Length: 219
Image (tube, rainbow, N blue to C red; front, side):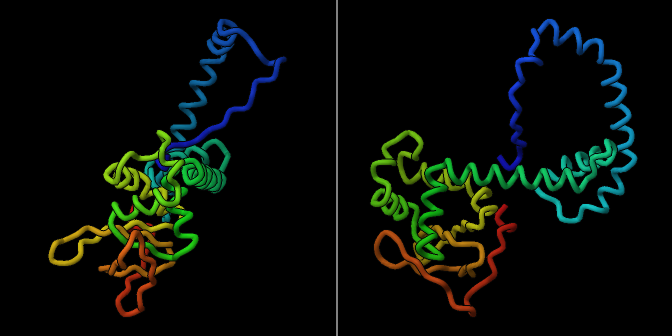
């Protein structure tokens, strides 16, 4: 969803409704003006684009789209700042919707409400989730096994990072067991985490063994 725009259309009031044939008739009549306006906007956006590139230093994902849309907004008299504000608001809304609708994202968020960091294997996380969300995990919206859970977390990791939750994977010990680390964005994450026995472990590393966790490094 972070590569898409969510647009909610208003309901057409009864007095403005028309048949498809009437719609296309009106469109064909207005098409020359619409096309000319599109070309004028494109030409102006192309002229303004170098200036927009210099002005936008902190680019979101879909950076090229963002630059061109900001240039077009300037060309149409809307202003690039207004576009960027709306674009960022749209992105935050989509992140919230994913965090609220996806059961794995919700479970991870709830887990880190009680501890600032969790580390362990994906299988241990699966067992932990089963103990907390057993009935809900019987629905089709949940992954069926630890491997599917791992894949779902891979899909969610960018959205989680935008929501302030960092996902890392490290190998530990001579057997190279792969550990999953989940933490809130303002927690310092160890290069290698020690996992307590049982289904989960929560800990905050000391300053000497820590590196700053930046959500942008996980996108």
